[in-house]
Length: 242
Image (cartoon, rainbow, N blue to C red):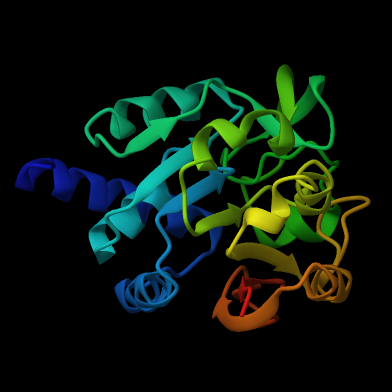
């Protein structure tokens, strides 16, 4: 259970993180998401690309009471994630790994703002729009397929939900989840309207793939945008099996 001062510190941390990355996450947006999760009786959330726990924390603040399992590959972010999740009996931080289409080791690029870190090379459009997101280093991390690790978390779940925020690596995450995907009731996925990372799949490819997997587009939320031009670069889309 969170104490009042812990919640205020957490709120400030979340607001600081989302302001750095150009996202405008409102309480109403998470309240709407929670309402939909409740409507579909979601009892487990696999949080891929958790960073320091912003998504899980916002779900809790909005009223979600089910289980959360968060995955994060970067050491500093994972340390904060573990500290936060330990305060919640229904929230687990998986050991530090990236999630993709193979089991082994992979190099991840570390961004100056942490949240923009990706396995894929960042393109100039991204770094021009989001100052401070340029890569400042690389680190070798473990990588796993969801098919290799997720069953232990979802085997007792009635309606598991998958959230993917992996900075252009979403397609690979789905490639590594072919066995468990039929069990997944809903997906929240970051979709890019333009190429921000080299080799990433764009929104239309993702829409078609998830449609072919049996998911229906349910809602779209505001995402990453160019503050100067007003151009939308990414959106967050929610899908469900009906």
